[in-house]
Image (tube, rainbow, N blue to C red; front, side, top):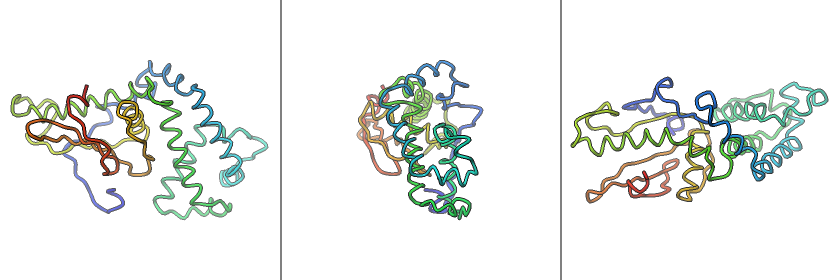
Length: 244
């Protein structure tokens, strides 16, 4: 939204990459996660989703991708069946397409640029949701969201009780308004999978500039959380109930 509208948002507080690590889907940060990631990837429905996508990718876009990647299909026929290869192709293409780059080396292959853009977005969903977290609910998504939700609730608790406890533990202002965390689609995906399981909130495509909001409301001395995706309300919940 900021990029699209040409505005600059100045946050009150930002998270340091070295200070907080939310990407627990990476076994570098959470070695115990590997077991649950394997379980997620090995679900039969997830395997079916992946196989269907890889088949469609090879049949529909294979000749174009091999051409603009300058790779021999005969020498490396399994190239587009590797998740990491397809991830980097699609991720780079989404960013370049959204930024308005001409990409003549891709366009000259004859590929339909718009169709491949949406195909890349679909892979972003598959990679972020199913490949990392499986179908909800999974232990992988529960573990992945625990640090970021704990951080969100710590900030909100500090704001709620700021007049009672003059210890500004987690906030840098006596009257904080908002906190911003910028991350990857996989972080948003874990939260979406969790919220789908707990509150039956529908998924949205994690397109470029995808955003989630957790607003703290006070109404008649009671507190509530309003959850929005891309500025559209998804749900309104009693605070303590949502937190629990």
